[in-house]
Length: 274
Image (cartoon, rainbow, N blue to C red; front, side):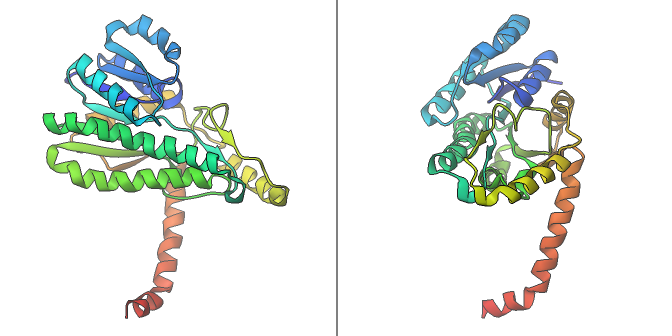
């Protein structure tokens, strides 16, 4: 297998860190970004010049372009671009402040968009490459208390599906990875929480119980690394792929309900056409 050069955002913990380690362990090179590069010191000690730590806040478009350029100049090419940086914003829709809503979209949508735009000229020039967008089962379905997070992932899914069609002629692949619950601290210290309204107290309790049931069997981020390597090494990688056992069950139930509703209301749909 030819050596690959990776650019991965959000490598201080979770998926980003595990995937960077997996790439480095097999002899690939990694430009690893984090808000605090001190979190990467142990990887630099272990892997030396194979890793390029880069301080980056993905919401800064100019910084995104500069980091991608620096990685390309340092390693001479880019093969796998992973948009992993992001976080979960909790809160019912009525509870969200403007700042909380905007910050979620700035990070999860625009951060990935800017890094993608920055990398595309290099991938087009070499007529190869693979863009990995870390979405979520929340990118195709939705639950209470994380509505703005869902909005960010649905946006990521939409522009990435369009992107895949636009760049296929250049030999560039796009894959949306849609994990279920994993032990990545996504709902822990990295999450943000809106101030709850007392009127939603009962609904919050219901949402918490439902989420606990969905995440009772969490995935192992370390195990996910082998799956990512199979995807980036595939000759024809998928546009979408679930990580974990539960997402397919959730998707099948959601889409069955959608199709049934659309079919039921198809006479009205036809009437609306005129």
